[in-house]
Image (cartoon, rainbow, N blue to C red; front, side, top):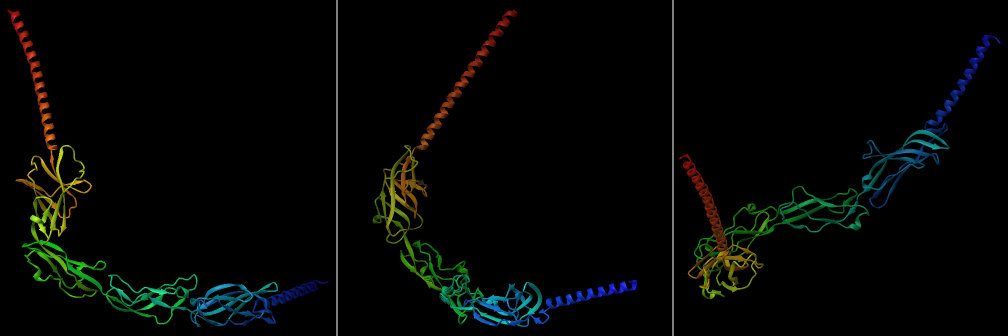
Length: 465
C-alpha cells in the first residue's frame, strides 16, 4: 500500500469518527432543551387557577401539571402585588405536580410558577417553563368589635374606649387586639371620633369602623377647710379642693373661689356654715360647692363646763364644749424613787372640742408642793414626753397641752437634781479634805528638812569656834 493510500484511509476513519460524535451530540441536545425527545415537547398543560376566599375558612392550593405524566419537576413559585410587576420567590420544591399553599389574607396577590428542570425515566432534563399568573384574593376575616363604654370621665391622661372582640370569632392560636385611631389627642373633656383598627392583618372590622365617644368633665368639690377661731380675733379661710386628676391643681382653674364677706369678722360664738362661690364649670371640671363649718369659739371653759377637778381651761373652745378631767393610774416608764408622783390626769371632751394647737388646763390644788415640782405628758403605754410648759402660782398649776394629745398629764416632784447636787457636794468635800491632808503632809516634810538643816548649820558654827 502506497503512502498516499494510507493517508486517505486515515482521513476517512477520522471523518467517520467525527460524524458519529456529531450525531451523538445532536441527540443529546434534543433532550436538554424544551423537548424530552426531539419529537415530544414538555409543556404545562394545567395552569394555576385563581383563588377567592376568606381567612380562617381553610387552606387553598395553587397547582400546575406537566404534559409528561409522573415527571418530577424542580420549581419555584413567585408572587407579585400587581399583575404587571416583578414577582419575588415565596416557595420552592420538587414534585410531580408543582404546588403552593396559601391561607392568609396577606397571601393575596398574583402567583406564577417557574419550572427549571424535570426528571423521569432515570434522566434529568433542563427546561424553562413559566406558568400563567393566577390571582389570589383571600379577604381578612371580619370580626365584631364593641366598646365597653363610650362615656368616659376626664382623668388628666390620654384615654379612649376599651374595645373588645368576641373570642369565638378568632381562629384558635391567633391574637387580635383592637384600638381606636384618632386625629387628635383624646385627653380633655369633649366629643371625639376615630377609626377602629386591628393589630392583626388577617382580620378586619365587621361593619362600620367609625366610633364616636365622649370624655365627660370630672367632679371637683370646693369648700373651705373646717376651722375654729377665737371670737373677736382676725382669721383667714383656707380653700380645699377634692377631685383634681393626675397632676392638676388649682392652677388649672381660670378663676379663684371666694368666701362671701359676711363670714368674716364674726364675733358671736357659734357654729356657722360657710360656702364658697365661683364658676360652676371649667374646661375639664364641673364644680360643686359644699358647705363647711366655721366655729367661732369661746376662749375659756369654767364652772359647769369642766368636771372632775376644780379649775378652768383657756384656749379656743367650740360652743357647747365640755371637758372631763379624770385622775388615773399609769405605770410611767423611766420613773425611779427619786420621782414622786403626785397625780396623773386624763382629759377628754364629751361634747365640742378645742381648736388651735394647744390649750391650757388650770388645776386648782393647794396640796401640790412647789418644791422640785415637775410636769410631763405620757402616752397610754407610759412613754413620756415634754409638755408645752407649766406654771405653778398661788395653788394653781397651769399646764399647756396639745389639742390632739391622747394621753395623761403626770404631776410629780423630781428629787433627782437634789441627789446630783448632794453627790457633787460630797465629792467637793472629799477633794477638799484630800487637798488639805496633802498640803499638811507637804508642810511637815518641809519643816523636817528645815530643822535638820538648821541643826547642821549650828553644829558647823560651833565646830569653827
